[in-house]
Amino acid sequence: MQRQFNSTDPSIIKQPKSLKGKLLPYQLQGVSWMMRLFENGSHGMLADEMGLGKTIQVIGLLACLREAGVWGPVLIIAPLSTLGNWVSEFAKWLPSVEVIKYHGTKEERKQLRTQLQAEETKRGMDNAVFVTSYEMVRFDASAFQRVEWFYLIVDEGHRLKNNECQLMQCLFTFAHSPNTSRLILTGTPLQNNLKELWSLMHFLLPDVFSSAADFLKWLGVLACSDRRFDFNNSSSESLKADIVNTLRKVVSPFFLRRVKSDIDIYLPRKVEVLVYTEMTSYEKELYRFERWCDLGMTLSARLMSTSRNFRMQILRQLVSHPYNVYEEKSSSGSYITDESIIQKSSKLTLLDNLLKVLIPKGHRVLVFVQFVETLHLLEDYCTFRGYENCSIHGSTLQSDRDQEIKDFQSREDIPIFLLTTRSGGLGINLSAADTVILYDSDWNPQQDIQAMDRAHRLGQKRDVVVYRFVTLGTMDVQLLKIAEEKRKLERIVTHHDRAVVFAHLSYG
Image (cartoon, rainbow, N blue to C red):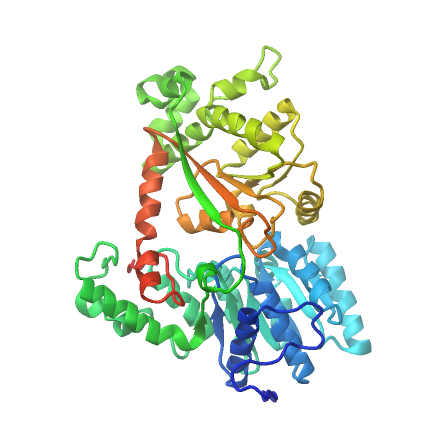
């Protein structure tokens, strides 16, 4: 395949003529970097901080390739919640390219494949960009294997951090043709340990990064410590520096990351505020293990017979809202939605008081929760208070997701968007909001960072305030400490070189 392209500037290419918008200088640099990878027959990871426009840079890359006469079928694999955004961004920036969203029920996908095969016979499909979700790749792996893809792009690519996951196994059956270029997009290239980073590099360059053990040897980890080496807890500053420097040398040819503070653009401030609250007397009563037996044998038996992790999950759900654990109903059997739903929960009381201040002032709010049960309770609360709202959780249909996002972005009369962190915190643009509330925290701090940056991103015109709720004397405090430990290395490495930022280095 022809991989040469013409550029008068050896470092930065010109803005593609077919692109309808104007790329910012750093985005043009990103496109240039990806073009150099392509010309050299290599693969890479664009790891810009969330909100800097990785989607637009990929569209710019494809525009450059198309104008250079180098093209073929492109496959973009992304979280379900972002498929609509990919389609709309192509329509806005590169409408001359046909974009096909591959998603739906089993029967709908079968009909789509039949239609595509007919069109392939008539006019060919080499100019098309296919956008699909991780799940569709797993369900229809055999269909994807029949195509020799020109470019394969994995959005939110940290999904591949487990080398043994089913998605990785499926991709390996068709992603490594000599003529297929590969690109990972992620704002969080490493979330827990070094082996996760190796897994991403292994997907991109399996011949170079063939062994996790060899990768760790390159970094000097195995030579100086045992399998449980933890960067954060190591007392040797020189060892830390050596590992960071070696890591930079090993991955830098295939890795590009820029953070907001290093980019010469105007972006409003992001202010993070910890808001502490104390349990209500009702919550305290439930929180004490010796009193839980009063809730009935079913809950008591579950708590006594299940693992410690499950009991910790129950505690988290209780702190989120006590009705997650013990649902009060009226004599008729229906759920009670009145002032008691607020008064019995310290966090909902806090949220209620905060929204009474924010909404009259015109602020628009994203509320992220960990549990679908909590989200449904907050929907009932919004109905009780008369607040218009949108919502997304893991079971929301794709068409409904797209409509909820569109409604919130376009309708100023909707002040609240309720989302579960894992389903609504990835890859979507909700810059109509200027306030983010982390109603409860995720075990993985990068998930919360992703959630914050749904609002704090390009296109935001106002300062963004992030409120994180923490209930004293509960699991919330422990989660906060865990998050702080996991983010230590991020600050260490950022201090040395803001172009390479990882969240936490350990070997596990």
